[in-house]
Image (cartoon, rainbow, N blue to C red; front, side, top):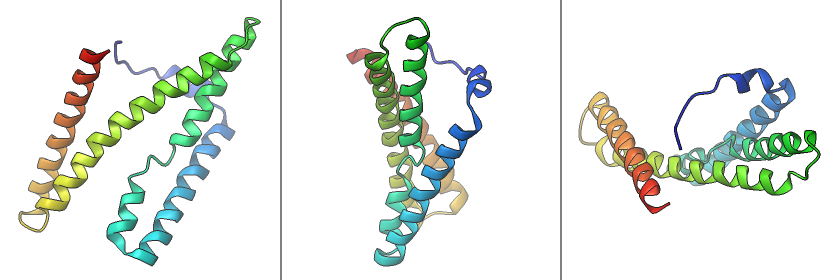
Length: 140
């Protein structure tokens, strides 16, 4: 699989789909804030790491794929589920890298300057993301 950027999907996305993503993201953020208020910022911050727009994105990907198949007279439910599953797998790989970023920041921030911490955490994120991608390529 070749990784590429496709800006044409921005034109195909309707305003209500952006609204759905915004509402899911807002709801997750509010939930994280309530959890932080009740259990403290350390626990609340963990919930901010939840990919806030993932539920909306997965459902929209499934819907788009089903519509593509429906246009050619086929049932697209299976293709929609597979496409959403692939997106979910990619999101989980990204979460591993974000977890490495968070762990690095959490451990180093009390000890070294903020700028250095963020630079090291970013390098850790990039290295983790690349490693997870390469492992995935070798296994599949």
